[in-house]
Image (tube, rainbow, N blue to C red; front, side, top):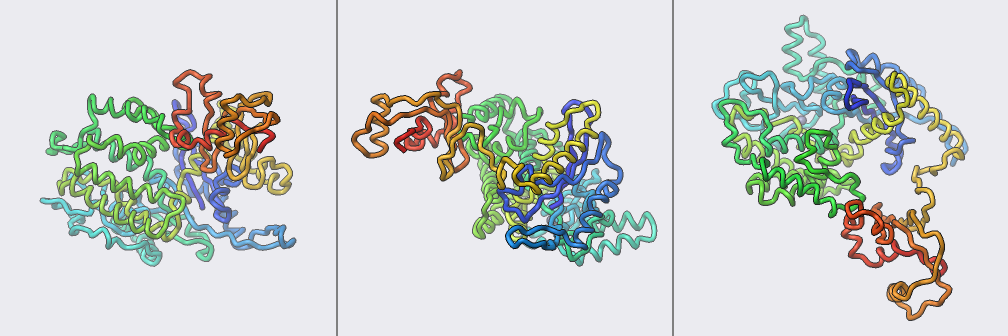
Amino acid sequence: MFSVDGAQLYAKKASACWIYIWVLFNLSPDRRYKKKHVFIGGFIPGPNNPKNLDSFLFPGLAHLSAIQREGLRLWDSALHREIQSKVFLALLTADGPGMMHITGLVGYHGKHGCRLYCGLPGRREPQGKHYFPALLKPVDYDIDGCLHEDVEIRNIPRASCDRYHQNLRYLVSSPNETQYRLRRLETGISKPSIFSGLDPYFTLGLPKSAGSDIMHLGALNLSDLMISLWRGTMDCTRPDNKDTWTWLVLQGDVWQRHGKSVADALYFLPSSFERPPRNIAEKLTSGYKAWEFLLYLYGLGPGLLYGILPRVYYSNYCKLVYGMRLMNQHNISLDNVRDAYLALASFAREFEEIYCQRLVTRIHFVRPCLHSLVHLPREVIRLGPPICSSQWTLERTIGNLGEEIKQHSNPFGNLSQRGIRRAQVNALKAMIPGLDTEGSDGGHLPRGSKDLSDGFVLLRARESDPRPLRDCEADALCEYLRILFLGPEVLVRRWAKLRIPTGQNCYSAWKEKQKPLEKRRTARNVKVRRRPAVWFLAYWHVIRFL
Ligand SMILES: [Zn+2]
């Protein structure tokens, strides 16, 4: 998978930079996203956007093309012989603006703006140039080229390579600039893609190699859409009036209290959920992270917005949550796909009915993300769980490479040197596995931890010396082991944390009680506290007896 994105290296200065990576699908999902298996493709220095992205991608693609044609020579250590591997480029991924550059499609504001090239025509507002994928035809609507009747959401066609190529030929044979503009509008293609230069035998080909990106879609685009409606920050086109927006509820005291509830939910989230959402009322506009939006919209929202959003908007929102939770899973069954499809299609259609209400002034509510959402379940059948082809990997890579920048006077040059060094280190580890201290799967237990097997790991801190049991501890241990008596030879030592097979850590009262109240993590492990056996293991490690 090819993945590209622009990144801002410093929060407070113009420092945009583009990075692209390769993800190797031969490796299983639990390995392929590890730092050492993500191949850095290249860096495109900023701070201005590249004028001709293709020219920067060319060296990498020329290399790919060469190993596709000549075969990639690999050593098969099981068979003790050399093999020729065929390198197949399955997917291209990027966020909305990036996708436009690599596929040569017109982009999400075009009349045919679907990134998967399904051919759905958009509609535009009378004053605007941008098109929106509105299914329902507004009343009293008279915009040339957008007068098609309501679109039935189930009849949206699939992407077709033949149609794409036919349209592309039509576009590039335009005799003059005017015809080119007309044909661009009509076909949704603005230029041929450099990826079409690859041998069609070694790639899915456009538009099928265009991936949907559940990270930007779910965590950023949809949350922005819903929150701007509920907060009333969405543009209001006259003569529409915000006083008629009955869904506009997150204001004033309600919004402040809601924000506080989000922050207070911290104590009910297991630590494996990583960064818990902060107070959204305070932090919404200052770097609220994709992960926070994700937990807010699909985790906490249904609980915290119950009774606040009017009923019809609440039930509509729940369809979105239900569908997206299914789509974000690592394993998605056929039943899940069907349920998600029904929920998301119903959400998108109903969204237009209850928010837009067939008003011309509200066409801009139907942002492209609503349409992309409806494609997701079908994409699962074609490509597997969307999380496996999302931009999370690239965002993480940008994050951890950005942290490595050492020379802030020349960040772009330094960044690309960090990338080269990482590639060299990874190559050495592959050639001389002994150099790799993390093991083949990249799993790396923290220093001083103790692996109890079956997914249980004790983590530091640890009591320095083993000591005999106190009476209360002996009673508890006897009860747990269902025996009557423990001999004096049993010694114990307390540990601070126990990692359990779900990847969650539970924290022992022994260490947590030494911290100030607000820093204690015990209250974040509600589930674990109800399971005394696991809790018990976290508290003591019985040295000789077990
Ligand atoms: Zn589409």
